[in-house]
Each structure stands twice: as C-alpha cells, then as structure tokens.
Length: 425
Image (cartoon, rainbow, N blue to C red; front, side):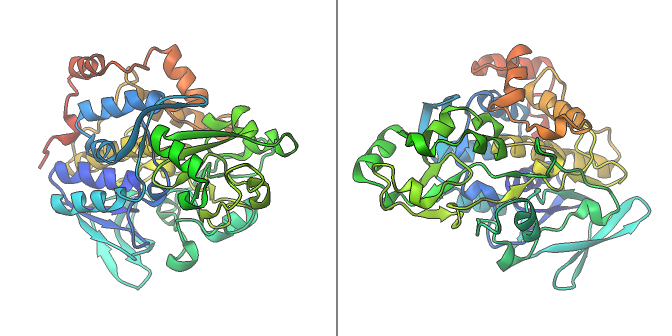
C-alpha cells in the first residue's frame, strides 16, 4: 500500500509517521528544501491546554514528534502573559532531528518537489503531478499543504510579501490539492469580512539585542519590555492568527521568548519604533525579513472534512493541520496529522475509520473546529489548545489537566492506548 503525503510541515511529518507505523509504504513530497515549515520559526509547546493534548497524543501512541520537541527544549515551565508552563524548543536544532527520525523509519522524503495537480477517477485520486512534469500513483493521499500562500494572497490580504520562512518566490506557490480535485475550499475570515489572518510572531537575531536582554532570555526564557505609550496599538491585536495572544498585555508590552532566536510575540512591529525600546536599539529581523511591515497571511485554503480527517467528496484524500481547519499551533498540527495518517491506512484497507471521542481534548477540538467552520461566526475564530475560545471550552468541559497519570488512565479506559502506533498491515 502506498500512502502519499503532500506537505512536510508538522502535520505532514506526523501523518507520515503514523501511516508508516501502520505498515504502509510512505512517500512525502515537500516543495521547499526543509521539513517543518513554520516549525522552523515556532518553538512553543505544552503551554496551557497543549500540555494535556501532548500527553493524550503520547498515550494514544502518536507522540513521536512531541518527544523530539521535548528533547530540543531550551526552557521548561515558563510563564508569560496568558500562558502557563510553556516549553520552548530550539528552532535551530529541530528540523534535522525530525528529518533523521523520518528517514530512520524508512519514509521516503522528496524535497523541492511541488505537487501541482492530480489525476482522478470518479471520486478517487489516482496520482499526483509534480511541477517538473512527473506523475506518481498512490493508493491514498494526505494533504497537509497548509493555508498560507501563494504570494498573491499576502499581497492582497496583507502588507505584501514579508519574505518569510515559506519562501514562495524561491520554491513556488502552494497548490490546493483538494481544490484541484474539485472540492470547494473554505476560508477563514476577519471581523471586517476580509479573508485570512496574519501569522502571529517574528524572529529577532539575539546577537542584535543588548547583553542584558540576552542574559535574561538565556536564564529565564522570557523578557517583557514596555512599549512607549505613544506606540501602543490595541487594534493590531485583531489581525493576528493567534487569538490566544489578543490580550491587552501584548499591545502594551514587547514579549520576547528564547527559542534559539528571540521570538517576538507580535505579527509585525515597525523597526524604527522597535529600536526606540531600551535594549533593542540595534535589533534586526531574521524572519520574516519584512517583520517591520507585515507577516504571512494564513487560513485561505481549508478543506471540508469529517471528524476522521477525510476530505468530503473524495474516497481517498485526507487532510491535516491548517488545511483541516482554523487551527493554531504545532501541537494541533501534529494531533490532526497523526490521526490522518493512521486513518489513511485504515481507509485503504477498507477498515472502519477512527474518530477520537469528544471526552478527550484532541477528539473534541477536531469535532468542535469542524462544526464551527460551517458557521460564519466560527470562521472568524481560531482554535487552539493554548488559549482563546477553545481553551475556555477545554476548562469548562474539564478536559484540561496537567496530571499525566490521569490522562494515561483516561486513554486506557477508552481502550485507545497506543492505537495510533498499531501495525495494521
């Protein structure tokens, strides 16, 4: 059985791993020269409800990537506005570790391989076409292409190409496979009824910060600096993809996190104004390079799906990550990817597909985000274990806990322990 994964971000890597563990031959196609995509500039794990979800995933047998991020952690259990017990992994070390792990499992990875079209027989995909004209057949397909790009979207809905880590001009625009297969994609909206949302953070070169700030970052993992009163802009909070940071504190302060670089928790910030803040007089952006003006635009290509991660209207296409809903975060991408990969193999074998129960956080967010995507109000919200609307729901349903034994016991009582690592073939 041949499973083809399109897109090598967190969700694509998670899908490839679970499909491989289920016994399939897995081939992954990534349009750039690196895995993980936004994971190369992310770095935040286990904050708020993501701790619960991470431990649920480990108990379900799909926690391979969680364990790798844990192994690259620079700081554990740090608090910053609106967030508790966050772990920060080193963005400069994570990609090679994930790449090596996939290769050790026997997953075939094809870099600089952009999928641009599909061949279909009825409601079933037969194969994919690459930009170089080659054609590859498969039994089941998983789309994890994300929802950022092509470049025109950043020009139309943002402040222009921000020269971000996705590098569309160099490696070509993202192509929606579900759309190529005749399925109408959905789009996230903003309050003003425009589409998409801006990525929520930037990276600053640590060596351009003052020695005092670098020392505090290295020791504590977080630095909070006051924004001059004349530069406080509360309206900017509305444009962020990461609504868990749409707090007054993130407008009144500069929040820096140590992820190897200095992670600046705002979509963009005028460079001249940034350099007015003591300790940042010589600061420089390293991702996106145009972080003084804008950031990448996301949520412009979401596939309609069922709660088993199968794309509606197609027999053998699954989706995960931002392609599967208005999700925010690496943990959310890994959870949806792990389920998609496992179910892709079940689907090809003619087995019943796994739907995770709503009595666990992962199952609930997959179902809840899907339901909300069908409403206009729901398309204006974003869904993450880390904050905003969904974290409040987690707490109200008593799904949030940091008690690992309690999480393991719940998964065990549901007879779901290690189900995502089961060999099916």
